[in-house]
Image (cartoon, rainbow, N blue to C red; front, side, top):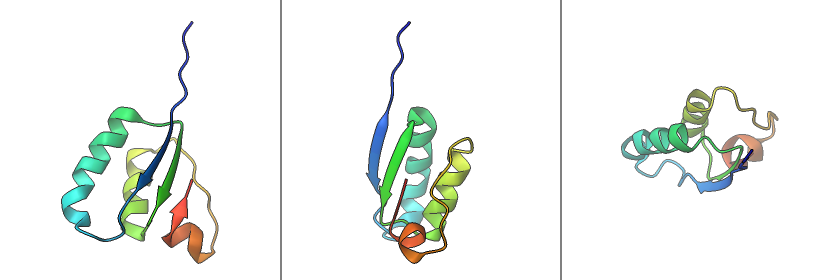
Length: 73
């Protein structure tokens, strides 16, 4: 039996043209559904989109600003 493991990193580019980029981000992650995803330049809106499109994934939940607004796994 063949099993694959996908680890992915993604720079979300903060708020830069987020409204235009969110549909492509959602579609890409829905199709690829990585096992582990590391992100940069996270913000509340992109974090909500990730939570929506990857509902069975868990992320680091920490109240410190870096995990909420910079990077996350």
